[in-house]
Image 1 (tube, rainbow, N blue to C red):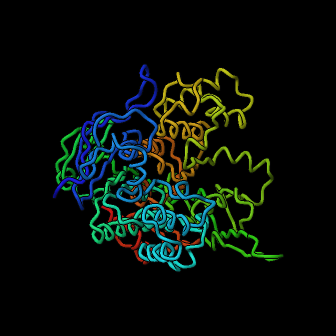
Image 2: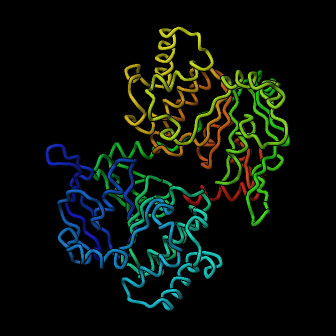
Image 3: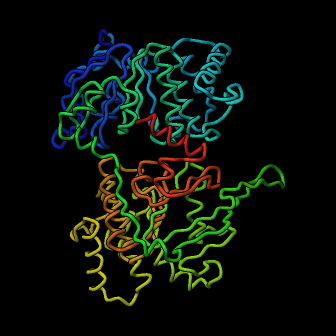
Length: 530
């Protein structure tokens, strides 16, 4: 196959000449017509900057050559690039909610591309846009043509982005993390759709991702990036079977393996630490003048958790996982049913009694950057629980406890005066864990604790949590849509769909012998990706 795209010695730098930071460092690769080539690497490796630089969509200093269909885009005029962008080379951006204009209906955003590049009038452009929406799997495309982005689900918005990108039948499609924010079943649907459209249109695809399962399933060839450099390029099967570079080997070794230790017999036979019976959570919302509709987020759910045990709750976005956890901790005021911690009802005690119990029930949230106050130092963040629950503790003893806890999660005491923005995602999650650990809780609710982290960092955090559970005998309520994480960390698994638990049992039973169709669908999605 002839080369459609040739990248030769591309370098991209940000900042002034004196302190310029090189985000892409002298990389070269080719992409043939009709080929699927993946650039893979962790956050900050330079993948997205490389993709954006091909069309000069970043304000940075670039050198090298980007040869597309025989033309050097680095030297092309801005007017010429505007003619290429969206027509010959199209791009699917990482987050469709921010890439789509929230004030313009989706149909108008698609017809704009056709009007600019092909000069179509409104009627033929509208017909083409509706056909594209139908082709990408949007139900009721004529009605959805008039919808705004916020009225669509994440999967639907991603399909709209694909329809917009394919409007002018480009020769090259750049897909920058096209499935990152999607559930596993939707992720598979989107990639199957892209593969089908790629064959139909004969276009080449440059896939930017950190998802190794996705790369294995989709790409013909793979380029591995680390710190702005392209450290290895190979055929997909060869790279996964015989990786050459040490960084590639580390990435491939980052998929979570079984980490949870078997539950001791005395704990298996002990009383439940946390228990919820017939929990129900309803939300009402306006539905016209003086009318309301009720949405049932959690519908008659009963779960139990032993001391030292991990219960994994898995399901897609909107299934009710996080709402269930908040109801179990009596943090959801509209919940109905019974919730007990250490045999004590959380709904029949005074606010002061409930507050004292909070020290024994802690939460690690999904996004460590959003959950840590940017205005507080690490010492203030980690010591906040001590200040609230053990206010009489001397300052010297408090600082000693903070330093010991940071050391336990793999951090040093010299970071006490620093702020959250000065740390990586993995370090911030360790700080978030330290903040909960300092109170010596009996229960940790882990709400998607690694979904915002790269594969190798994710494995480090999971190993840390597994070791801490053994050391302190804590119970974990682990919430995730990632079945690999759930399988690696859980003694038992509960599968949620549409507010109900459709299946629960031991981790081995759920993974190896699922009984419910929805569980089988989730497992099949993981197998398809892998």
